[in-house]
Each structure stands twice: as C-alpha cells, then as structure tokens.
Image (cartoon, rainbow, N blue to C red):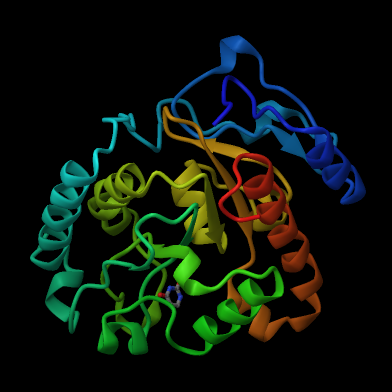
Length: 262
Ligand code: URA
C-alpha cells in the first residue's frame, strides 16, 4: 500500500472525495506519531484538533512481521486462545463467553464495533442481533458481504446491561485488537460508532466531527474511517444516507489501494 505521511489518493479517489464535499489535507511532518491522524476532512477545522491528546498514544507499534501464513495462523490461534481465557477485567465474571470476532481473516476491510450485546454474548459472534442485520444490509449496499470482511469489537466481553465500556475495560482489551489488526493486515479499518472511534483514535471528539476523514492507525498507518453505529441508525434512520456516504468512501479507498475488492 502506498502510505507515507499521508494517503496517496488517486485521481478517482480525489474526485469521489470532492463529490462528497470532503477536503484533503496533509499533516505536517513534525506532527507524526503512531496514533490516528486525520488526512482528509469535511470541514476547514484546524487539523491539530484531531490529534490525540498528548501522552495518550492509542495504538502501539504494529510491526509488520511479514505475515507468513504459518506464522500468522499460529499467532491467530494463540490470540483466540488468549482471548477465550482472558480474566483481565471484571467483565470476565459476567460473560457467557468471549466474542473474538468473525469473518475472513484475510479481509481487506476490518469493521470495529463497540462490545458484544446479549445475542452476541449468547452466540459468541459479533453483530448477530438487530444491529448486525442492519450492518449486513449496509454492506450489501456497497456489494460487500460478511465473508469479505472481518468484524471485531473494542471489547471481547459483554458489559452488563449493555452499558458503555469503561476505560479500564477498553485498555485491558486493547492489545487483543492491536494483535488482530496485525494478523489480518486489513487495507482499511472502519470504526462503527463513537465508542469504537474514540478508543481506536484516542480522541474525545464527536462522531459527527470524526466522520468523513481518513485517519491512519498504528505505525503501519492502516487507513481508518468512522461511521455511525447500526444501533444508532435503527433509532435515527434519517442518518442512513450519511452512513451510505461513509461506505462509499470505504469502497473507494479499497478500490484505490488494491484490486481484490473491485
Ligand atoms: N454492537 C456492537 O458494537 N458489537 C456487536 O457485536 C453487537 C452490537
């Protein structure tokens, strides 16, 4: 993937972003860090506003180990086992089972949600409830299916009463997610919902201000975009048009950074 301090956007991607009223800017060399940095924006807002708080790097180094298949399979199995026996936070006491993630471990697109709900906790798979059905429909709208992607959550265990993840719970789970990204090596990460976006990027911004921008995640600078959580769209269907724009952006990035999704 052509990645340096900024995404190298092709002409067609520029046109798509322009059509969606997304402006493109490049971060200054001196602003580099391993955490998420905005590279395109819908507004004229100061790019510095999008930087993670000082001293709060989110993603530790993602080391590209070459990802040889045997090595990757081995790391993946170890990771699954580590998640399933995790007792690093209180949620291990109330869960039915851990929810590792599901889909294609060779996926180009990795979707990151918040945490398992009751159905996910029962079945051990992410996004299988009503939100999951809507997510499937959203993906189908841009000709993607679940077998094309890998879906994970910030938390691998269900918070009681579906409350928001607490910072210590997200911190306890963060390394699992980093290792999942390292193994899958997706070409694009899509955070669904404010909680996922804020945790991945180390920001406290609103979802609306994070949408329509292309951030990068980790030292390998995996492009990362943000969209609404399907549960929010079920409550506010009028926002579906915006989420469709976000999916178009995802599609455009995938098309322009490789050919496996064309
Ligand atoms: N919401 C999420 O964020 N993740 C799930 O797995 C299910 C619902």
